[in-house]
Amino acid sequence: MDRLPLFDTHAHLDTEEFAADRDSLIREIGESMLGFINPGCDVESSRAALKLAHTYPFVFAAVGLHPEDIGHCRREDLQVIEAWARDERVVAIGEIGLDYYNDEESPHEDQRFYLVEQLKMARRLDLPVIIHDREAHADMMDILLSEGKGVRGVLHCFSGDWAMAETMLEAGWYFGFGGTSTFKNDHGVREILKKMPQDRILFETDSPYMAPVPFRGRRNNPLLTARVAEKAAEVRGIPVETMMAIATKNSKILFPKLKIDEKMV
Image 1 (spheres, rainbow, N blue to C red):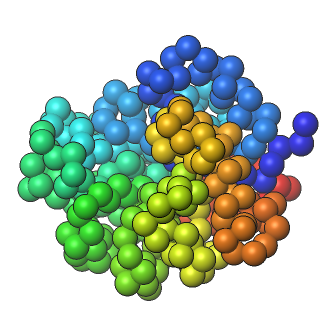
Image 2 (image 1 turned 60 degrees about the vertical axis):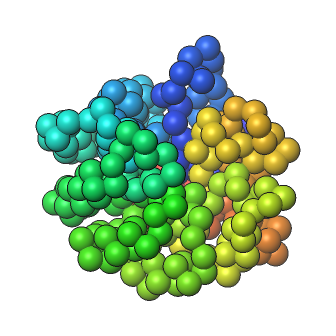
Image 3 (image 1 turned 180 degrees about the horizontal axis):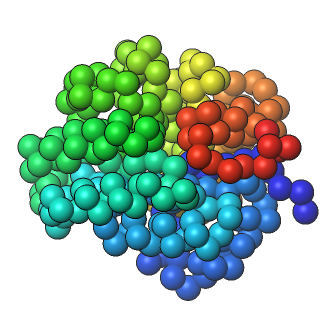
């Protein structure tokens, strides 16, 4: 079977939801599409992401400390993440950011500290970042436009408005679109996807979370990136394989360390 010119820029295949069938599923992904990036959220998940990336040639790792997880992180963990980020299979720092919704164990001040430190890390290593932003849009823009000036990256599962999108587009940022773009109540995501310049669109699943329609409520996986691409092609009025190739080309530009089959994009 020919592989689709499709790449998932954000999937957590290291999580326990994939314990029973991880290897067989990853092999199927490699036969069906070009691969995926597995971001880390703390030291343990970043280690697991790196292991997957060294096991499968079409899996790539990002390493980082997620805002929801910093309650059990130590500042010394930043040194571990930076050491791993130098690995040839690590293509980004992430998943990092701000989350003012799930913040019971992650004080906002601590979240901002770890975000800024990892933006500095990305600048030192000349790596892009994968940004998580939930109910923290104002602080996120302030930090990315100041402390993050000159750092490139993707706003994963973008949930801001068009005014925010325009500001971040001007600053050079990319935008990740996933399952939410297929939901009946998409909170305006499809309208933003329709307006988005085609050279800033990335596809993602955030597996095992946020499965697209008609699989909503089930375990998500990178194979369902195809559903995201189908919806984007419909919204933008272009052939689906053209839409896949556009997003995959954008992935290669944002993440220069990706080794993706050149013939497919």
